[in-house]
Structure formats: C-alpha cells, structure tokens
Image (spheres, rainbow, N blue to C red):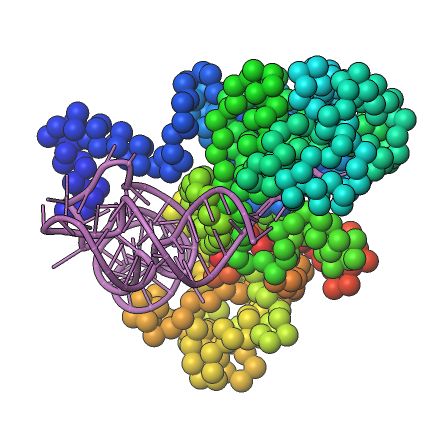
Length: 526
RNA sequence: GCUCUGGUGGUGUAGUCCGGCCAAUCAUCUUGCCCUCUCACGGCAAGGACCAGGGUUCAAAUCCCUGCCGGAGCACCA
C-alpha cells in the first residue's frame, strides 16, 4: 500500500484519525517558528526598507515572513520607508512605488504605509523630550575625535553641558543653522559600556543635501536610523521586530532611549544574510544600480539581474518566492538560498496550466538545421498534432505543418537512423532529408527511437528567449501566436517561459532585440 | 583590539531550552528504475549530515570546557 492508498483506507476505517493526520501535516508545513509572546490579533510588524532602489530577491524575505506571520496571527503589516539619509543612501523617488508593487507581487499588502521623511517633527518632539530627561546632548566633536575618546571610555566635554545650552543648540540644528559635521545630538548612554558600539551614539546629524522628496526638502537636521526607527516602532505599536544581524546592536542602543521614555521594547528576532546561488551578480542594490548604469544589465528586470522584477518577468510567481523564503526559517546564521528551490516551488504552481509548445533553438554550438520531410514507405502527413497539455486532453491539440522542418542539430540522428518527431511520427535521416517511416509508437516505447521537438521551417515565429545565462535565438511553432502575452508556457524539453511580447520593437542593446523577432519570451527554469 | 552571534547531508530545515523513543525529520538536490510521443508532471528506490577534541552520565546532536571556522557591530549609512 502506498501513502495515498493507506490514507484512503484510513479514511474508510477511522475518518477522525485521518483528519488528525491531515491536521498534523498542516502543522508540519509551518516552517516558521511561533513568535515569542504573540497573541492572535495583537501582532504588529513592520518592514522598514530604504527606498534606494527596487528590491533584489533577498528583500523578498521580509514581506514573505511578515506577511506569513500576519496571516497566522491576524496581525498588522506596516511598510515604513526609512528614508532619513538624503545623501549617502539617497532615496530614489521611483523606488517607493516599486517596492510597494514588489510587495503586492509577493501576494501581500501593507496595512499602513509610512515615510520617515514625513515624520521629522515627531522625531524633533521626542528629541526635545529626551533632552528634558537628560538623555541627550549636543556635541561638536569631530567624528574622529569622539571616536578616540569613546574607545578609551572617556566622555567628551560636551557631555556635561547645561541643559539650556543643549536645548538651544538642538533648536539651532533643527533650524538648519549648522552645516554638515558641525553639530550632532548624542544619546547619553554609558560612556564606558563594555561594548563600544553602545557608547553615546548619534541620534541626529546635519545634512546639507536636500531630501529628494519635495515635502521633506527643507529639513537639514536628520535622525539616525536607531533613533528614528526606535521612536517609530513604539509610536506605531510594533510588537515584533525582525531584522538582520547587521542590526544586532540596534535593540541594545535603542533600549537606552526606551528607558528614558519608560517604554517597553518590542520582541526582536534577528536573521542572517541571504545569499543566492545561480547569479554571478552580487545581491546589493547599489551594485545592481551600477551595473545598470554601466550598461552591463539592461534594467532592473534584466533576466540576469537577481531582482524581484526580473524573476517576475520570467514568469515566476511571487508565491514560489515566498515559500522558499519562509522555508529558510529564522536562523541567525547566514543562509544560501538555492534558486532550484524557488524553481521547484514555481514548477508546482505553473505546470498544470502551462500549455506546451515547441521551440527549436539556434545556438552557435548547436545550430538549428533545416530539412524536408518526404514520403517514405507511406505518404508523409501534412502536419503534426501534439497535445497542448499531456494531462488535459480537453485543451485540444496544436497543428504544426510539416513539409520542411527545423530541428536542433544535436537532435538530428546520424544518417540512416530514425527519430520521432513528437506529435507527428517517425522519420529516418537520409542525406539532406527526413524520410517518413510508417512506424508504430512502440518503437519509442521500446526505447529504440528518441522523441524530439521540431518546428516548420517557414511558418515559425522568430523568437528571442532571454535567460539568466544570456539571450538565445530560435523558432517557435506557429500556434504560439494564439497564446496570450504574459502566459507561462512550457517549451517542451527546454523548460518554462513567460511570453513577454509579440512583434516587439527593437532596442539598441548589443545582441538584444532587433525588431525582427516575432516573439520575445523570458526563460523561467527547466 | 573590544563586543555580540552562529556552526545538523550539496542547499535549507526539524530536533538542542526540559539528555534516552535520533543508527537523526521534511523539502530540495544527485543517481537509478517505473510512467510517459518532453530531459516536465507523477510514482518507487538509493545517496548524503550532528565543526573538532576532551569532560559529565548507564546514556550526549542535545549539558560543561577548550580549540577551530564563520558572520556582524564598534559610522555624523540603512
């Protein structure tokens, strides 16, 4: 008895036991651990992206995990753009919407969307309050000078400044009366704390460059992440924070502020960095941006780019990405995400609906060859009729005109040998033609003859298949023209692909679309 | 240098808190077979791991110590 039969039998004998078993299965699929101190209906989490570009694949982890927990606990998902550095991590105005669109593609929606750059007055208010509590002081030390003192566990002279002066100097910061580097506001923590990373960190600094968002362009005094994020997490009721190990010390830093305000710190989980195999390109927004600017990549959705837009264009469902991301769990060590796992998840999702078509590739090391199919021991039929989907005969057959056909040369058998043109019949390779052989399908079943894909020489669609490894040209069978743009199909014996456009315009990319193609498809995976 | 933090098959993960039922789970992966007019889907089978060394114990992936290796922070970046 196999598993299915066993279950059917159990269903007959003891339906309640079967239900238990199935409930267990569901439990087992919860790879993500339960959140500490989480109660249904009371969980609030946030993703806090820096909008300095569209997302790479690794970014999918945050919405995937938060979204999954949101569903489990009936919680709230906040998307807060931490755009508080108009200079070195300058926000990209298009990225705000690009990120929200990426989240939507993954199958989630933020319940609230906030921009830190809208909230400067709130941060100033809390800074003032912190100063009143004796929790912050203005400091005009240079970064190097302060660092030297700090590393020795020594306070700088500004630490004991009169509160009145601090207040005045901070208001001058807010009013933009200092230039970048002249004055900062520090949180008074513990100057000889054993961890140097926690000693009197900077909460606000001056930035001369205006913020790209018009609404925030007049501000010059900007909070640092630890202050802004810490205040916002409390104000927006965040109960559980998930962040990378690079922010391991943030909670410890922010606790000093929370203590001054008498706030309770949320639960925090850290996770390691995600690395991807498969791509030669680094998983970093700035690196990808540079490659695009240098013309090495054609854009954020270049199939070679490790971005969400790229996998989306290739026909990979957001759900597949989410499953792979939640499978990574919540470990604090760095993890490698195998793209094969994303592909396996996607294959499960698309295989059933993907109609089958033939694509004969024309590659330098395996060029397409053109031959005539001629009558042999029986007249050669005029066309082949392979099924649109092997498991859905109701979807009907395709009609592929024979006569003169193209094959990939590696599929062409040696002279004298036979090959089965899928959906058509058996042919024998003779000199420059294929001679029809009146053979039964048993020759295939017996393993004597290979089955290959093929297309008509004249009626096929010139196709550009864009893949992670680069572009491949080829010829797709005529009926693919009836498919919808955006459909995910399977090119038999090659793999799944998303139909991107018919009769596309040319581009000036080297080796890119010339405008001569009838079809552009993006390769998803085998 | 100081401070955090982690190490289960190729990859990810369960188990580690509360030692035994763990000769270690599940998925992916690789290989073989079956199915099949696809190298897809499906089915079957096989392969492959507790970082190392000590200690405690009747018993250690699990507790303790040491070592090795890795990641992160010590920014007027996020």
